[in-house]
Image (cartoon, rainbow, N blue to C red):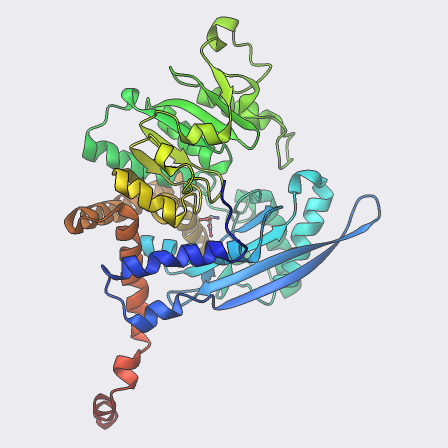
Length: 456
Ligand code: GLU
């Protein structure tokens, strides 16, 4: 599979601006501003390991644009993290927050580490150490982290605690996705998957889908993939394939998703962060000691993550990492609908191939915006000191996702453009409006207008 060069992924990400700008109300200067991250911080994090040795990890925090509000975005722990990736992820956050209209700009963080190799105490020291290094860069009014790939609520709790110690002031609003007893929001845990599910429900309504006839493949069984699979399965959709970093399972008449979730999470003792179980342990439900009979599993098969993308299904949901659908495999993608729950799973070249075939792609910055939207709810609850019910969270999220989805869907139909271009155009309208409110050359370079304003 083609991987981007270190900075290539950011360059590829911003390519989408030009096409979208043709359909947006945005000044050229405002667009230019979005081509550069506002600020980049690179840090070294020394961590004392359990065996007494010192290891130094590298981390980044990027603030892309804060015109619409404090920058917002997750922190990922992954061995392949690099600066270009974090810049791209921060850019996508700027666009994502604008898509749903929440008052944030975009940011992102990452640490180069394979967290599965760390003990729980090493993981805590690394998480606290990262916050110590970036404490001056973040804050409830400047930049607000959250979970991302291989980070979770417990890690957010440690990070909030560390920040509060440094500031000598309890500061829950500095980070979202925290455990509920530490100021987390109900409904944050499944919000990314749920937001994508609400988009699919809108498509179901518009296209008159019969859920039991819809075959779905989900790549990635982390926080986002698990929940979107669970919610769709509960509504009768047939989840015929799912995968995790170790591979995938396929079963034509549908997998037992709740059982797979249970088994996958069993590998984690209470309080542990990473499981050792994989969905490929059983081709019916995903677990090896699952008691499925031989007959049950006979129709199932174990296969690779790459093969999952090319399955003959009705909906494909990439919910793992970026750069999965590339120029090399895009032509083989058979699903007529792709709902991007991961960030950046499709490269810009692959995108053109999909658009050419008429594939309906619900782009990442819309499909996975549920997570950051409920992060906004969490931040608002922390600042108000008043906490909402889970129903409140679900209703407000549903309202925002359905409204933005339909606006974009109609705009795409009206202009005869793909959903991604329409989504970026929608985001650019909102970002452009904010940047232009601060003044562009139309305001500053026009001396006549300028003197008129002074006279007033
Ligand atoms: N990491 C998530 C994302 O990529 C959530 C970010 C947040 O909640 O700030 O959208």
